[in-house]
Figure 1 (tube, rainbow, N blue to C red):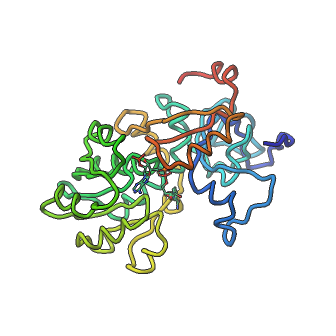
Figure 2 (figure 1 turned 30 degrees about the vertical axis):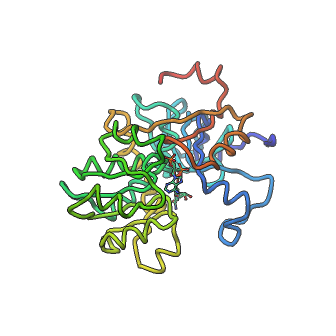
Length: 300
Ligand SMILES: NC(=O)c1ccc[n+]([C@@H]2O[C@H](COP(=O)([O-])OP(=O)(O)OC[C@H]3O[C@@H](n4cnc5c(N)ncnc54)[C@H](OP(=O)(O)O)[C@@H]3O)[C@@H](O)[C@H]2O)c1
């Protein structure tokens, strides 16, 4: 971490004091150079995209937001910082019933899940498989598909099978033999497959007979090229209107966003080590704002 000057608030922009910033596995890839061709990194630089916070200043001409307003938003490679300069179009209001940590994940994992569910469009009574259904994107994907009336089968490791069942999702263990276990869990077939992990899930979906236009993956570029399956992700649900709809579901308890652990900023290295294990139940987040300052904010 490095100290940088507090940013100015240009006309037409909003300065947000960040409360919580989400963490996503892609950020590890960017830092390690995996995506250097599309997202080169030069250090020191910002990290993190989705966050919640409080409006600290509004620039000249901004009428949509007021100082002190709780918000959530998306600030590409800039969110894990005390202050974010945002366009009003990159912010949504945080509903009162939604916690800061959950709110911080809406414009990232939430929007990614929303986009995938949108393109495969589960119908009432259909059977839908969600891979890595206890993961950050997966746990939201599974619940959004269930809210559309689908029967959802979710894959997870041993430790998350019971949790998925508690959400009303039929749990199936991932790993060797997955195809057979899914066939057993869905004797009448699978209508749609939402892959949030990669690693052969799209091959399994094809082997189950799911048509490519009803398969979405956010983690397997090769499968997209090979089978012509869908690839809707965060960029396809990147609007405050969608964030507000997801936030509304979470604020009213229709959608649960489990927070595995929140880390203070001085433990950011541990936080990313843990994220890199790819074992989780929901989201890991960073508490950017100090506990003292945070406790002075209005609940939650
Ligand atoms: N393009 C975009 O806009 C976008 C946005 C967000 C994410 N993504 C990508 O989507 C993927 C998922 O992101 P995420 O944030 O949901 O990740 P995450 O929270 O780290 O997900 C981890 C989950 O993966 C499960 N898992 C581990 N090994 C597995 C295996 N061999 N097979 C199936 N599942 C396994 C784990 O299950 P257990 O804990 O139950 O063992 C865990 O719950 C990442 O590749 C990420 O880069 C893309």
